Image (cartoon, rainbow, N blue to C red):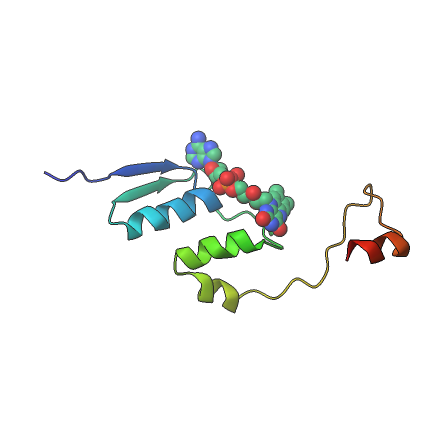
Length: 93
Ligand SMILES: Cc1cc2nc3c(=O)[nH]c(=O)nc-3n(C[C@H](O)[C@H](O)[C@H](O)COP(=O)(O)OP(=O)(O)OC[C@H]3O[C@@H](n4cnc5c(N)ncnc54)[C@H](O)[C@@H]3O)c2cc1C
């Protein structure tokens, strides 16, 4: 008799959710258990890098994610991090 669940994932943040999708697409029966009852009220993905987008593409979610995303034009570092002078910035490309 086939097990009702092959994999139980505790925690359905980005890692748990992505793993659940990947394992489900591989044919495994997955249950993801999350202790929070609602979605966190602040954004936690103001930006993501190319590797993250490649992971979405590997899960066949690239077009869907691209459809609700915009290109990042600039990053403003934390105020405690010194900004480069225009001279330094010119050499950093
Ligand atoms: C304010 C903020 C802004 C951020 N902005 C960005 C950003 O712009 N770009 C970016 O790439 N990253 C950003 N991050 C980081 C990003 O959110 C984390 O890297 C990412 O959430 C980590 O994913 P995770 O699945 O490993 O862990 P988590 O997101 O922490 O998910 C773990 C989940 O497991 C659940 N859990 C834990 N223990 C249990 C348990 N015993 N039983 C059931 N459920 C449990 C938790 O409730 C949680 O939902 C930001 C984070 C914060 C806080």
